[in-house]
Structures are given as C-alpha cells and as structure tokens.
Length: 119
Image 1: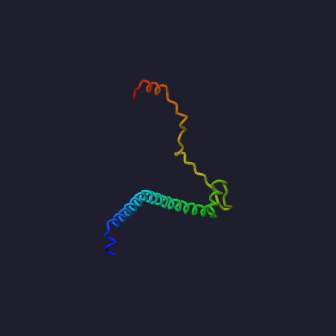
Image 2: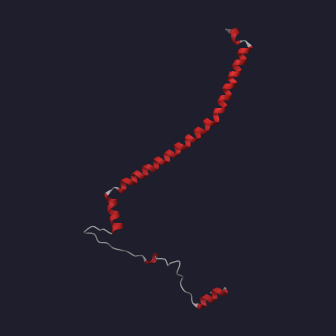
Image 3: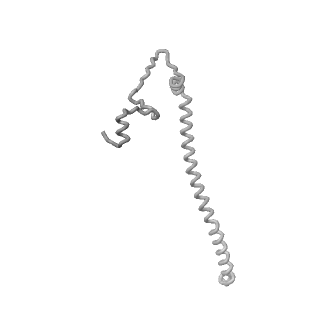
C-alpha cells in the first residue's frame, strides 16, 4: 500500500484533482457571497414589513373600537351625546393674514421704501 501512494503519477493525479476542485470552489464563492448578501437584505426587509404589519393591525383594531367611532362621529358628523354641550373656541391670535392680501402702506411709507430711506 505504501508503494501505491509513493508513485509519481498518483501524486500528479491527486494534485490535478485538488487543483480542479480548488478552481471549482473559487468560481462559486463570489456567487455564494452575493447570495448571502441578498439574503441578509431580504431578512432585514422582512423585519421592516413585519413591524409595519403589526402597526397596521394595531391601527385596524383601534379603528374598529367604539371610542374611535364615537370620536369620528363627533368630529366629522358633528354628533353629540344627549347630555353633552358643545363649545366652540376660536383663537383669533393664531389667525394669520392671507399671504395674497398685503396691508396698504401710506404714500409716505411707499415713497421712503422706493427711495431707500429708513425710518
């Protein structure tokens, strides 16, 4: 048995087989690494989609609740309970003038502005 492995042609054939196997593995490594990277990206995307799905389920459950339906009836349909009083509060301080309508300036202010004079 020792004489079989000591022959040169067996060593050459074994070396050739190792080289062919090495080349085959070397050619498949980039595709393997690319597939691993894509799989990692898909798993990350799956986690994002799962979180979004959980959020949507929670939102759906809330929208099916009685309190949400009552709130929407009050806000959009102007409904109220029989013993409830509705109060409207208008905050005039927060009302901003329309950007299309500018306040009129006196002719003196207009002239000073055109001449570049400061007050």
